[in-house]
Length: 141
Image 1: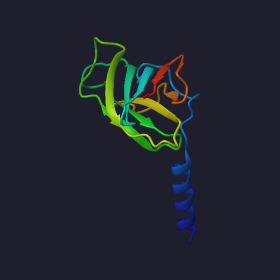
Image 2: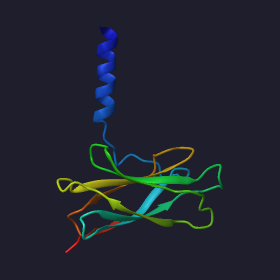
Image 3: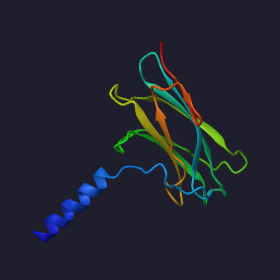
């Protein structure tokens, strides 16, 4: 019974944990999201153009993905980065056909590297706000 209680407590903690946008490392060994342009398409799907900065060091250590999540941590989109960008920093890559339910108005974009995972600067995007310091939102007309 104690094991079941402990397991349920740990599971609850894992599924209710939210990303703390104010706690991150600025060290470039962690991938940092520097800017995002979110564009809603005529079919209501979204394209995200995400700029990432990281101290890529060839295949042994490089930014290898970025993701879009809702505020509960559910992944809505994912962009795999297939190679290092040693001499292209920051770099920008796009991902389209991202489905965001109409009841979700805020998303988080964060990047990761193949050594340290997530932990760098993420950006909170309000999809109902045209722009902020770190992002631009373009809604379909």
